[in-house]
Amino acid sequence: MRRHFLTLMDLSPVELRRVIERAMELKARSRLRERYLPLEGRILAMIFDKSSTRTRVSFEAAMTHLGGSAIFLTSADTQLGRGEPVEDTSQVLSRMVDVVVIRTTSHEMVETFAAHSRVPVINGLTDRYHPCQLLADVQTYREQRGEIRGRTVAWVGDGNNVCHSWINAARQFGFDLRIATPPGYAPAEELVHASRGFVALVDTPRQAVEGVDIVVTDTWASMGDEDEKERRQKDFDGYTVDQSLMNTAHPDAVFMHCLPAYRGLEVSAEVMDGPRSLVFDQAENRMHAQKALLEFLLVPGTR
Ligand code: CP
Ligand code: NVA
Image (cartoon, rainbow, N blue to C red; front, side, top):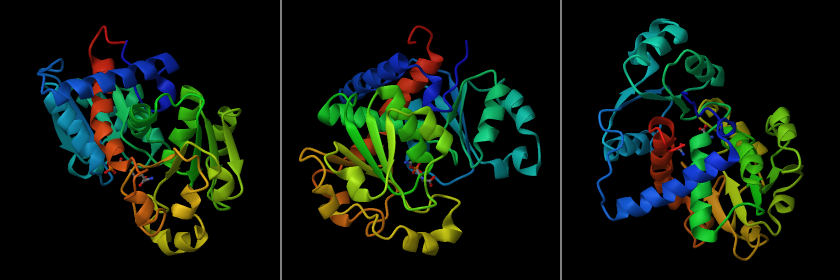
């Protein structure tokens, strides 16, 4: 049966754990430069309507390493940009390629594409979620500090797509998530409700961070929010993850950020470039985690 990965809820907790374990194995094997070509002849189509460094390069590199190839597209240079329905585009592309990654604004567009696709569809970021990021993030914590289950995580900043995926992760991986956002920037209520028991909204960054194992943030102005940049900088005053805030976390706590980061805004340069920061391991692990995901979706027997 074809499976999609539109949110972290599309895989069971056991499957997610298996993908992360596998990502670590594939990373170790790639360090040894072992040849492993399970996706020989397979093609990934990538439809990207928003900028990307990590997601694009990690998927393209992953496909090449595993013996397959990738075709990079934007809506603007396909007929999607001229009004061809998503449903038709999905039926056409999925007769030609083996898997599709989509990065776009509308989560509903990705759901519609998936509903009409013969092949697995992966969410490469929508306004609502960024599930691939969380595979890499959980892998990174696991490598550096062990199991994430039972730990406590603080999200400080915008209740955005990445925050929503952390909320899903709290439930799927079994950790506590404390979220501090300025008024008006809270994550979607129904997602918080669905993860109740794992997620708490708190009033200040300090309340979120005190004693936690992981401090996470993201840009205050996501792609699409550019017009609100100035207003957001005012609204997020006091939400910078700086050294004095990090000092209130557990002494062994780490700092995480999906990148791109804006030093001096959501994170101080000292924290971003400091010894507790895992941001570049997170970025590298995008590639390893997505290799494991592609294998899970495309190679029978790895589920
Ligand atoms: N973290 C992340 O998805 O980065 P890109 O926007 O560079 O893909
Ligand atoms: N929240 C950010 C994440 C970028 C990877 C955005 O959507 O722009």
